[in-house]
Image (cartoon, rainbow, N blue to C red):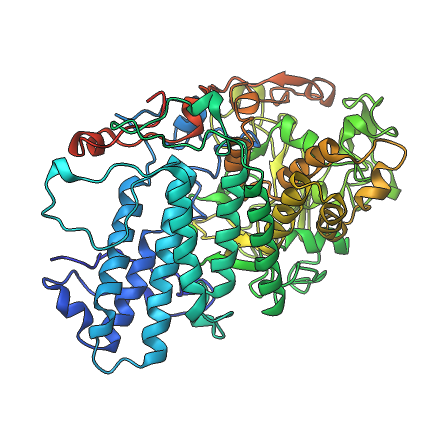
Length: 626
């Protein structure tokens, strides 16, 4: 039996920060299962391989990276764009995790069946390895549930000789969630709270297990999965077994709240906290010069960040987020652009939505103004921009590049991509999206590019290391541990559960923790004399806070679905400024962008099960609509 993949990747290999060869630890495929457990080193290699089935979280071609309404990109010739177009089907699922995640589950169960047979393996390591496998079993089930809803539960090393008529059917959603949580609970017992060495970074911990469980229960309580008779009243197995809970259960929000609270306490006890360092790498690039913006820009990037509870440590590729996003250069492609919808989600400096802030809501957002010296940390004094870009919250300036604003990057010492005559200051670029500018679509109207440009007239800076030295040759960007789950996620998840259980005081406390780190007023100070902070208003606020805080962190794709409002955002063409303009006057127009968008409700709320799996398993039903 072949049990080890040649291509297995180790999450523990912090290969981007140290020079090591951990990816070479896993050997070629073995002919016999027993060979994989013949000694402690073989067992170590096997448990590492169990992680290899996890989707790589920092790849731009992932199902959820560039496929929400927050971003528009000219790279829609790539596979991921089919999710934006709504053209994925059971026959052509395009990006599907079904088979990969089930292969991972099988790998983990084989390990659990055999780990007690390993000679010479200490009890401590045996328990740790088994707990890691249980964590992965819970986590793989969580990822499957998030994609597909009710799934086939894998509770052991299923026999490959099972007859097709005896293949398992899907289990009801509540049963799936209960089993995933059970495995995570069992894992907690023998997992350490932290992994003390750099070589173990990314392996399962008890804190990560509690965090995944909390997120699982938050999904269970959310409108998509909690009493959704509109979508799933007739969603049944072939034996007529109902697969989705059809009665709203308030207690599920209580369960989510308790799990979030337990995960937060565990994280704090283990030394995790919100990232508050204001000067990381400032010796390499002093920008952003505003300390709050600096902190926010590096929240994802600091390799010692204690906010991260679960990390992706595999390096991103040459054609992933950073190189696709950075302004024009030989291997910098200027193309990950926030949409007008996303830009409007960011608050004003007063911590309020732009259209609800009494000081801003009557503004002409597109009025062209000249940046004055008092706003030098927002944009370059003397540059012309639109009023909409000024006096926004610090996250806007940390994560968004706009006309007349800054993009913090280094130009390589030799053959650098950026030069002073094209707006480069030592450590940052002054952005110009008007045709002929350094971030524009082309040098002239006769040379407009069909690719490698910002469709919206903005660029993202989220997850882009300001110390990247962009040059005129192939360059891999600086790597960092991608935050799969960070503490702010738990804080806002807890706040959301508190809102739904009408504990509004605690909801405000945890909202304010994230808002204070972001450099904006508390929710009470912001909304004083503007609106009453009742349950409905706080629900709106906590959702908007999540959409801002986790911009481009692969959360919005799932959040808009679990809140059951995805069709409002994914079925509408996105907007941006007019990048086909030679003057700022013509640039300062909101236009509908010619990029296909389609979302079929309720079908696209869940992913399709591949048709090959349905053909093999006569007891398997697909998700509604496919």
